[in-house]
Length: 405
Image 1 (cartoon, rainbow, N blue to C red):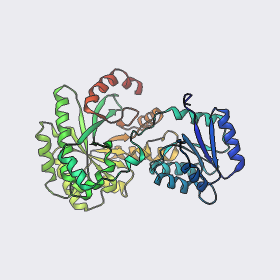
Image 2: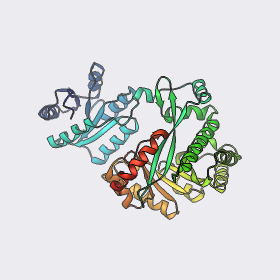
Image 3: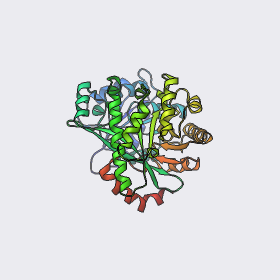
């Protein structure tokens, strides 16, 4: 817990005894200010009345009137960015489902507590307050909606930069490739993540120019690394909105060959949940992309509507298991089961299996034990600009790869 700054905690529970009990435990642990509310509506009122920020919100999920799920929906709509702990006496699976829902809404859930709460479990939670907030951009900025014309000018002004997130081979512990991730270098908001502008690009007819630009920049950077002696490959995300023209394989082939990069060092990632458009056209284009020599990854596997049917028909070379099945899988039996079955399915189809979104060593060890080929996630490294990557790679090869093996 942070000793320099007073900690402010809001506890929400309809049980008055529980409010008093948890407040007492928090004060025993050195929390200087504990606020309480007896239901979700009261919690919203307390939050709205604050001038100083609430550092930690401890919320029951089973309450009369406005329950915890409704409360979380409301604070997500208000871009609440503080830390959250969920606690309840309900079935652990239901508590876990609520945690996933809150996380999906962009809330920063740092843990769950099962009633009766103990001082040791609270102390463990409070230690997480010293951890850095995982996202550098605040919630309001993340949800900023941009106009088409502003994005068009950003493309013209070359304001799209690439960040690179490494993937590590389980067999050797070495970095084998990087995923190339677009960031908009915005004059007012700093680096803006693609979630905030890609949908606008897809809907406005700019996606083909955008993807070709990202692919060309990725190939140019790979060419430079290869010349410097680094044995790497790159992965580039392709929108389903790109798959609207039969000459797309030639367009991508030309973009890579212009940079003197072997095509087999480039993998194109397609999101599974968006593969349900024109099946015949999609299969035609993806098959010809593979014939050109590109690798082809099915991204966010497990989140789409027809996973096994997709694998059966589409010419993929790689399967990327979605982060929601990797995060906390070492402790979550349901997530572990899906992670294990996804890895096994990928191996049956002869695919290179990548587990992405790994943030904890226990989840890394589990993914390795389950037989995946590569791992990607914050435990290894966050996405970084090219100017930082080589220095990071040098440090990693000296230290971190031995730690993770």
